[in-house]
Image 1: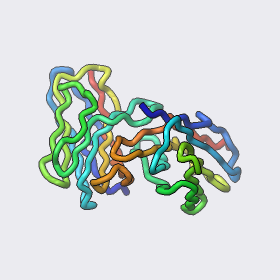
Image 2: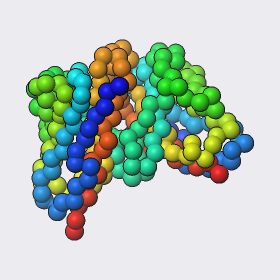
Image 3: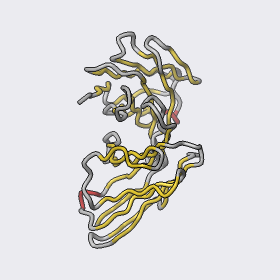
Length: 114
Length: 110
């Protein structure tokens, strides 16, 4: 069982909908990440939060809006997505500080845009 | 930016065979990680390597951090059906983001 919990597991939405992906961890990690993964490809980093502050935005379109309400929770708000945004969205967490700490992943949200 | 070349891209083996895969980089890394991803799930950390030359085992899995800091390999001994999946290497340098390899898809032939 993964220690990083993501909900929902699957999400189908239209291009005009607004939805949110949620991620929760209780390992005391202070760094949290959002990744996008297309089929048969490695995960691609989207955002990094360190101590609840956004530290990296990999030039992600503004239709994706991250939020870190507290040290255990990470949200990704979605609005006006495009069909090419259909993918597996993975959340990960790690000890904060240097980049040498292993990241632990959730099982992802499979997102389909109609 | 840094790139990780992972090989082979795919492997078709029989149950009981040993498996070897590797990752090479054009730049050095301070940390090498190996993950396995099953269909419909997220990557699961298998082994973390922190020091050049380090050799670490986790059950039937063994991984090494290359002396040059530009490569790493993962060996699986006596493969079993649950070893099927995609294996990713990943590397860290300083505070930079985690860089993933292109993945090795392992299939076991009945």
